Image (cartoon, rainbow, N blue to C red):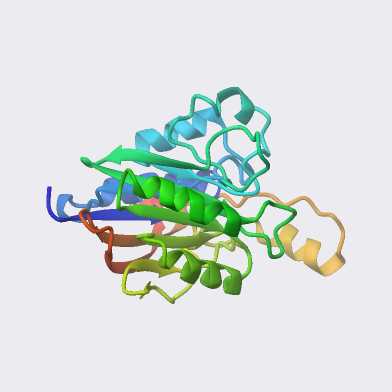
Length: 269
């Protein structure tokens, strides 16, 4: 084991196109390109809304080691049939007390322990418990087990993400990515000389879409203000959005952060 660990995080996986995109991308990497740890946000992985057990296991088989989520995680009723046994799945930590599943956990991956925390924002998101109040206590608790801490903050407002990131960067967090907007931001940086940061890692799914959904229903919904049902876009032309963090295994300090933005026609495979 070298002195660093390479963590790859996929932005929100949307539908079958997103799952296929992630599977192709991981299988396409050469040995020297392969990450040590693979994390993905999966709250839109099953036809755009929620997660089924079948798709959970499919993504595990593809190489995703830990899955985070957000406001759509309960959209499919069957989640409650397997969430307690889904040891690699997290839901936002600041959901109401007593919610099914776990919001933070230490995983042993690639020979090291890494603490992963899933949180959801409050601005334009809904009536969720405060992530600010949850963060400090859980971070100090996880640091007893490992210096490597990773946060997926599922939120709409860029200012909330950046403010929250600056807040937790002083506590010893190694890496922070935002999710939910499905639009990758070009602001990767190291905060507080320690924590790798990007406002949003983007999404994995159909390239010709509106954040993973079919364009026409999306346009109709916004143009007419009718409650038009959104449908996930399915296409062989996909985009893969992700972020990569290189973290020192002894100190937990992030030494580098970069973006992945790949467009691929899966019919060419």
